[in-house]
Image (cartoon, rainbow, N blue to C red; front, side):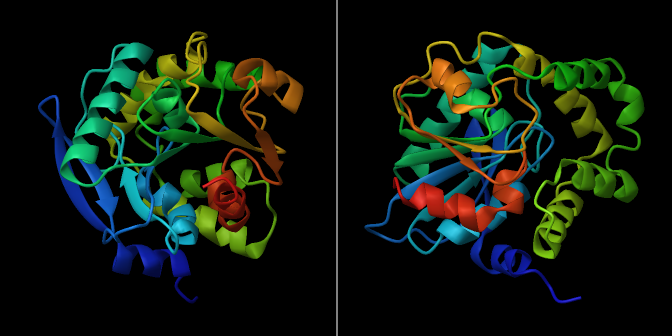
Length: 274
């Protein structure tokens, strides 16, 4: 089987680096900074790492400088205490300032899923949210609570290849061979250690916090959702409009893994507003 272009692109265009935030190492991946191009900070979702946004980064790379941030306890970032939503958002603000000061000024933030909870109040740059979850659906809330309670047990096999492939198959809504290969590749690249899986489960309370999306930042310029994403209760433009006000909300065919299974379509939508 030929190697995916996303895997090749990540190997040749991205380099892992570290910035210290509140005494902890925070991992980020980036390519060369090209003058006169806007710089975009990409933030992944829970249980993922930078690999999950490589497909989208590749599609945006021609016109943007790309930085992929790894959340605490994900990828190569150190675990640190994040007691609640406020602590998570303060962490992101500190990480953003460190990157902007030490690496390059950042023009846009693009966050996916759980990453949206970190950035939704930020005033530091213009923001695009991918598949945000203002209010988790009943089914997802039940699943999240079970995951939290049983974390020491299910973390034992969470990253097994079989379970990674089954999760990807269940979440993927674009039924093409290419989408299947990309979702599978990301899942196999982003497998957490046992300690990381247990730590990540403790962050689920942030997802379930009903106050995360109150007073959304006026820097949010676009929301993109998957037509078949059932993670959030809000399923149409009217319900999302009640959360995001006059911010444009666009729907693309796909599910909660939209930037992974449909990176080209997602990138085209983003490029219209950049």
